[in-house]
Image (tube, rainbow, N blue to C red; front, top):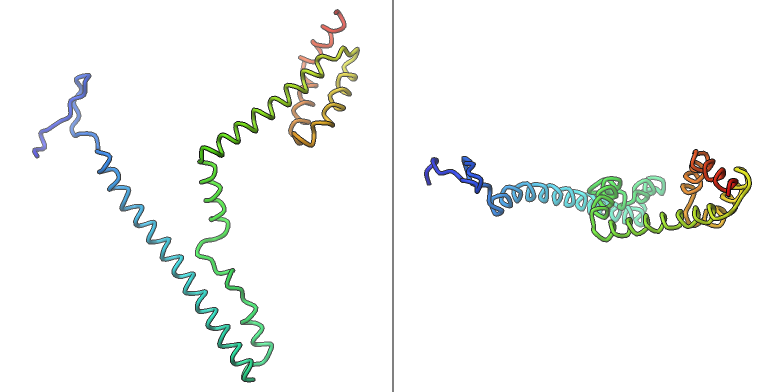
Length: 183
C-alpha cells in the first residue's frame, strides 16, 4: 500500500493513517505481556530451585547427623531454616497486587456501594430520630444524640460518632433548636 492513503472522517477531517486495529493493539500488548510473564516465571523457577537446594541440604545434614559426622549445633543452623521464607515475590507486593485486583472487580464495587448506602441509611435514621425529639436545650439534644449513638456505635463504628458530633457543633442544630422553641 502507498503512503499516500489517508483516512477521511465523516466530518471531512483527514487523518494520515487509519486508526489502529484491535488486532494490532493486541499484538503490541502481547509482546509486553509475554515479557512480563516470562520474567515472573523466571522468578518462580529461581525460588523453586532455591527451595529444592535447601531441602537437599537439609536432607544431607540430617543424614550426617544420623551417622554422627555433624554436631547438633551445626545441624540446627541448617535445619531451622524454613523453605517457606524463600519467596519468588515479596509478600507485601503479592498482598498489594491481590488487593488491587480485588478492588477492580465489579462485586467489590457493588458491596462497597451497598455498605455506603447502608451506612447512610443508619445515619439518616439516627438524625431523624434526634430531630423528632422536642428538646428544650442544645445540651439535651446532644445527650439524645449520645444515647442513641450508643446503640448504633457497634454497628457503624467510631466514624459516625465523629460525624455526628461535628454535626451537633454546626449552626444547623442551633437553628433547629430555635425552631422548636418557637413551635
